[in-house]
Amino acid sequence: MKSGNSVLSSYGTTIFEVMSRLASQHGAINLGQGFPEGLESERLLGSVSQLMTDGPQQYAPMMGVQELRRAVATHSHRFYGLDIDPETEVMVTSGGTEALADCLFGLIEPGDEVVLIEPLYDSYLPILRRAGAVPRLVRLSPPEWTLPKEELAAAFGPKTKLMILNSPMNPNGKVFTESELAFIADLLVKHDAYCVCDEVYEHQVYDGLRHIPLMTLPGMRDRCLKVGSAGKTFSVTGWKVGHVIAAPHLLQPVAKAHQFITFSTHPGLQIAVAEGLRWDDEYFIGLTRGLQSRRDRLGNGLSAIGFDVLPCAGSYFISADFRALAKRKGFVGDDTEFCRLITMEAGVAAVPVSAFYEDGGVRDYVRFCFAKTEEILDVAVRRLSEYFS
Ligand SMILES: Cc1ncc(COP(=O)(O)O)c(C=O)c1O
Image (cartoon, rainbow, N blue to C red; front, side, top):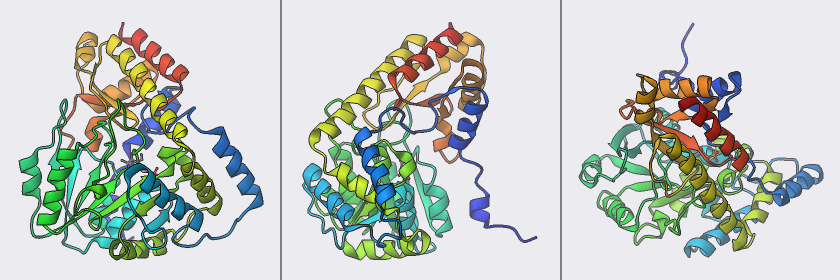
């Protein structure tokens, strides 16, 4: 029998799926996969259940329902001062992941180079390779996750078509500073490259910090494709409603990929998301505040147990060095084995940070998702505490 595509077939099942399955087999609390629990808005759920009954039920327009495209443009102006034309510069997708894939399939020519920063979200590499691009990886390392500017500059060259930048960043919670963004912007201009900006955690930025879209920097408006996800903004990851914002000359080829992959997204979900984006600041402030307090609750609990918890400025995740605890238990193994151990023995699942690197590399850190109810976080901390005491 002939085989399937060799690029995609070379990747195994994602670590999120593997750990989630293991968690459910062992009745473990799943702090591995990044889905929120207990943060969904009753108001939004009420709207959507009404829309599911009343309709519409048929294909939505390819670029998204007008209400949502307008709401995305208004949201971008309200939070970032961006002037976006909802008719020509916004496209609704089935989640941030589809938006990213559309950008890559829509822009890449075989042989193009793409600059990426590790640790990275798992869909980037398989998709860009399937599109024929050659990745140029630049590594951030714990515990500082400092941007190695010289290495980044060296990764750019005449074949660079684009860069993918994820800020706030999964899995390490890094939020890129204005000066780091300015450095990146200079490289993009110098090499005439684009940037796919994965900003799905734009409303998960803590401690009074501000999310700065790269698109708002001088010269970046026409070079950036800004990706967002209602799954993260409204704690409904199962809805898979995302969007891309980009200048028309960039959005047009990206829309071709969308046209041939999903074409459109459930209209009722889109209308509900549009309603959410119009909510006043209270909602967005409350979301951030609630997650920040959960971050602190879990972080303090893990520190008290003996994890060396790293700072987290954004996203749903904190990462922690487990070496001191491993030593206490006489455990010798890497981060993947440690995650299996705590899932099966302590009843709490996490994911290994090495899974976010192409060649593993970093092996002493695990990632925990704190976007859970306080009760779940407390039980997880209690279970880990009992196990390691
Ligand atoms: C960095 C990053 N980008 C994109 C996504 C995908 O977003 P969506 O669930 O809307 O497809 C995720 C989801 O976890 C993510 O962590």
